[in-house]
Amino acid sequence: MIMRRLVSILIFFTTFSAINGQDVTVTASFDSSKIFIGDQIFYTVTIDQPSDLVLDFIKLKDTLCKNIEILSGPVIDTSTISPGRLKLISKYLITSFDSGYYLVLPAKAEIKNENGIKRFYSDYSLLEVMRVKITPPDTAVKI
Image 1: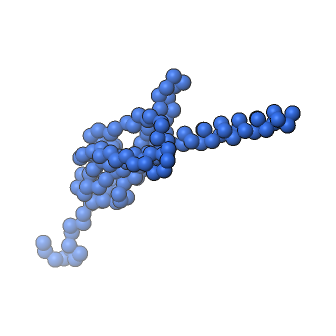
Image 2 (image 1 turned 120 degrees about the horizontal axis):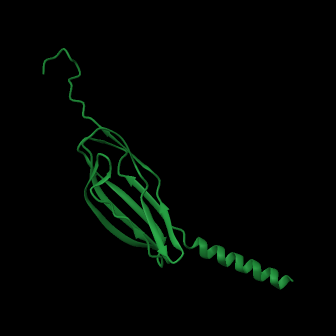
Image 3 (image 1 turned 180 degrees about the horizontal axis):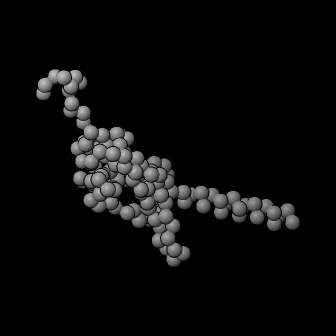
């Protein structure tokens, strides 16, 4: 009886650590939360994953969302952060020519196998694109 309980506990912790070892974290962010029209900044997607896991990462093309254009990228950098863990960093150079607040949908990575598809998502990203103020401080002064 005690032996069965010990075996059950051992199996539980072994299973839990195996599941925990498959943790995947996807994050996405801009270099800055505010830019002026025409400024260029990087949009970075980072994936922290086990090194033995093969993920499909959806590469972005042309635009992140309406009015945010991708100028170049992705430039992908891979590094080992600890034994058995990898970090993939994808950078896109972006710009916008329309002012406003833009909410970019989460970036995603997925695993496809015989059991189906498992997806991992980042959070939403927010970017404010501002106009440059070109009016003189005193409107009585002629331009």
